[in-house]
Image (cartoon, rainbow, N blue to C red; front, top):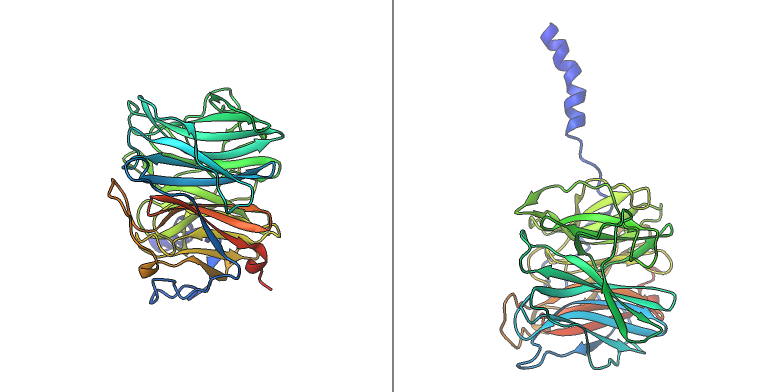
Length: 385
């Protein structure tokens, strides 16, 4: 009898220890038609336009990737990494181009030249007042396990770039990881993530210093697992639900081909463990955010495989249920493959990053990791009405 009673008392404890937290959001059933891999059965929103920011050049810059957008003082900026042939090659440099209308782009300029001791890659943008900040990530060759840290260049009133400087934690210590390109403001804070050393351990971070140069604090977050110094959660983006909670979405390095997501109810200070969601993905970088009215969105390749096509946007009025989606670029025979060979080259629309500007949502990406391309969607075409 004592053993029986002990077993009964143990049941609640056992059940509780195996309870899995609810997904931070859900996706409507049968939203994507996987029998139509070219477009997943989705329609293109009215008024969509696509323009090329930069075209790969024979013998010069055949590899272009990691595009990220930002607008400042009436100008749209695009930043990306570029090399003559291969991904993360020794000659990799960071370029940027500008546009006044989002469709016609300037010739690229060098933001960060190639370095002998490290590879440099794009890190994102931010601004405060008349100062525009360009973040890059530095990956020292001698650092083991592989990782890096951010640097920041500053342009005052559109002038020449100064720096770089190293951004700092609130303690005054230098940031010790690769910064994610997605910066969002919530509750008077700037929120993004850091892939911390040793290796690449994804960790949410926030600061009340809206320059992004100092005051950074680590959010309390536990990685699901770490393999070879790389966390399962990688390359996150984030959005806010209608109830005020923040949601950070991650690439799943363990190849579930589903978006991982964690939730914060205190503006980024503490986060739940990341859960596998119903949102299909291609194990790649994605872009999330909120439209001006609060609608949450995720831009990615919801193929459910390594295929980085098509490119779509999925939307939710409340950030809790994503129940509509649109096609931005079709794959399959609608997309020609790479024109040049190179390390890690692949067909598809890779690593989208988005930005709202002048009545449109702009999405930048590397087409076949060769050309830097933007697709823009009128915000009215994304309305639920």
